[in-house]
Length: 162
Ligand SMILES: [Fe+2]
Image (cartoon, rainbow, N blue to C red):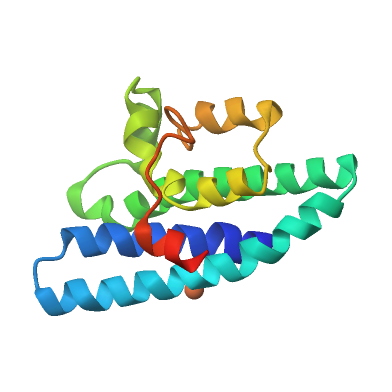
């Protein structure tokens, strides 16, 4: 429930929101918004019952959930960059590993990278209080969290799903 609904469905909301914002065809915009609304419901279905699970968890169990979330998002973050470059890099004669090393060393990397994660998945974890001082710095190091993690406006379709 935590991995699928809170994290992956949360990432799906962000992806469909990005695709919808980039779309120009009105029908495509409508379809992508409908899919985003559906994904927002999926994430709420998981996050709402997880509140009780987290509240009833022991300190050790809660720390285990927090570590699990971090490992999932950190792995997704690492893989999405490299996999995308491996698929299209050879077409343009670029070395994926070099490009990733350069991107990760950019001081602007966290600002460029965080949006897809902070759109809904990080918000879900914040709602569940599964990001503490112990892991927040690790998320920031990897460019998954940037700026004020509570300062972003909640997507209205996500807010409506809760
Ligand atoms: Fe879904």
